[in-house]
Image (tube, rainbow, N blue to C red; front, side):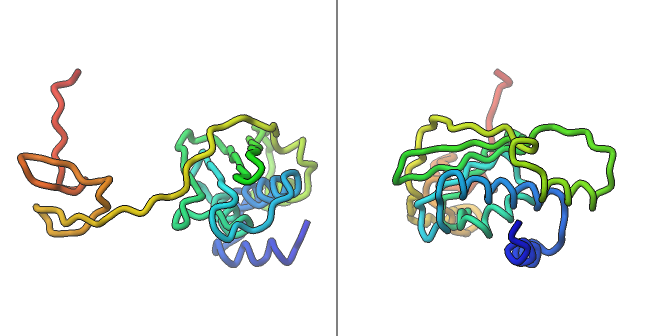
Length: 174
């Protein structure tokens, strides 16, 4: 384990925890198996299926971020990460193996950081549709609150352009 990288990752996240260790290991394993470098733009994409601590490690280690558009949240609640190399068209998925360890937080974190990859994760090369690169959208001013919102998030309601906060959903329960 690269202790210096771990310490920098902890500094970025704010504290040590087993969740951060999961993302740290998943990112390190994917980088090794896929021969990846830090993503300067959108060369690498990560589809994370959770919004837990490990996602901070993914951002720090791989360069996949929400702001660049190469970190995509698929909210299944699974501790799973799919890394995609756009240039090679390869995708590698890691999902944490459930292990009901009766240990304290520090012991669990230590195990996650040191255990063999195959003991921690189910790992497989997968075929996925490679997400398109991030788009830039114009800003539209909501005619109710006056705040600007991305045009792809604007709705028409009663002839007005409205943001999602002001939009009043209509449903008859179908």
